[in-house]
Length: 543
Ligand code: GLN
Image (cartoon, rainbow, N blue to C red; front, top):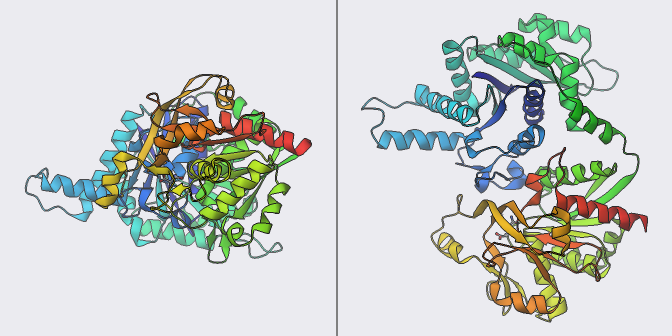
């Protein structure tokens, strides 16, 4: 097994996740079995307990692992489902070491941060590689070189490099700032990042140079000379319109050849035809489709952060590209509808509206108002998890006549708890067991023939990923159905309602899911529900 470690320099958010996914893609395209792993330097045991406005979306794998959004990128680029072994946090590694210590697995020796934490990380990486039957394992180390948090993982790279000098490669994703359009790309911060790596006993083998523009020869020479690398090992990684172009860009600098040569692997022929077709489709999309996302995890100080909904955004893009449309996505702050209902009119300016997942009370009345507006004005609507629960609340209030209907998450004393806690979840909340205890990961569902959902999937058995504690209250299912809700998907035992929709005779596209379809959408394989939603949005736009 060969290992490629990827670290970030200069600043966070340089696009390490996309770089790792793209390196994985180009090697996969050359016929190698590749997998990608993320190490998050946080002490949180998993990403499930982190606030999305701080850490970004919590991505969920089939096995229920709540992880960093980068795993979503890996899955989308590799077009592969990944296991929970491919994600680890510093917290989970510490936890494993301490558990071993308690079990006397260190045989009475002193257990220390070094080497035991790096060794544990390496053991987990190897296990993940074997589990994925990978020939090449790519490991992304979160954070930026020079910060305290990820030093133990740099140490892991150093240890493995000593053990397997021919099998380990270190890639630095760095950033070259451009002060203004007339100035030159600056290489000094990258030089400092390399010096920092040097002081951890490491020398990068390849530098991926992120910058607003492609790198010229002069810049490559400068970095190569100052950082003791060869010029051909400095790879230009300029900003691109679509992240899916990055693998193709890397190959312009022959990155996969460089990597294979350094890892002493025999090159195989590259086949990127399908991916190149995708890029052509992305670039050939003059006509737009306008989608509004009504959410609440956007604001961070004065900035708007869309990372909280990254998989939803990507799923919209995949579906739009499928129809050769340019996705134009706008953020709509749910709270503004609660006190200013006349703002709802703006929703008519969109071709389709999505209400994504969420937690807690803030913003819910605004989302409910937005859903009602979409229902009455026949705007294509897709609800995801909380979006489905709130659609059921809206319907109960407006159509069934349960004026104070609500989810017990929002209003525990509601006389009409149409959304209620899953029985198996009550104990968790009472005992404050919040970590990794939701209904998580892939569950099967059965679809009803003749419904919008069935037509979208084209089959009756599906499997989708979940992350929630509440559900449609079974006591109300009959009454809701009596008034026109169609529960088109349910758990095989029919206990849990998984998809709700309205008949297409009353609304062109009104569908919502208890699960998160966005986690399974892939650029080469858009999710059927997103695809049908975008189709309806395009139709709405054109009528
Ligand atoms: N808060 C809701 C629940 O826990 C929905 C969760 C979500 O949207 N992911 O059931």
